[in-house]
Length: 182
Image: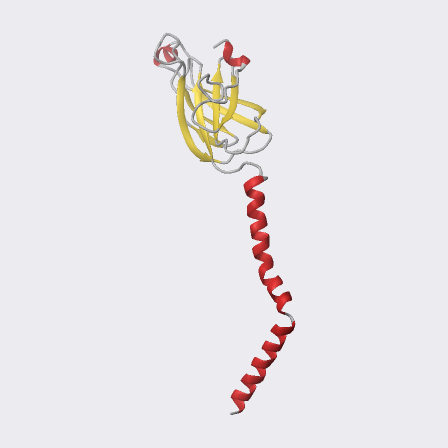
């Protein structure tokens, strides 16, 4: 019977402790839940945009692009732009998913390949690099459109859908001076 008496004493002590400090105990137990809910609300309404980024390539140059990267995230390739082809207005549209791109600047590295006639004319593949400001990303914008333009110019733009922000069909159309000369 000694065991059961000790068990009852322990039970009585636990009940007394709980009765005296009930609010304090529930406060400590619920504190992590309150912090978790607060963090979830903060992420939903005020946190900066984050998550995977889809890179979409657009090329306006007469050489194929063998591959490119933005801040180390690899992108697709594109064929050479043919201004005489009336069925396309640009080469590209290839997408790659999903990388993480953040920061205030973008390092864009791309490799220019050659077509058959360009190779016969003596051109060889080359790698180019440019560091430029990364446009501000808003919530929901998970597509980064990368335009390669003549003269080693690069244009970046975020969108929340597959349409480029520089495409007139886009709901968030933004005209660009770099694309006017096409």
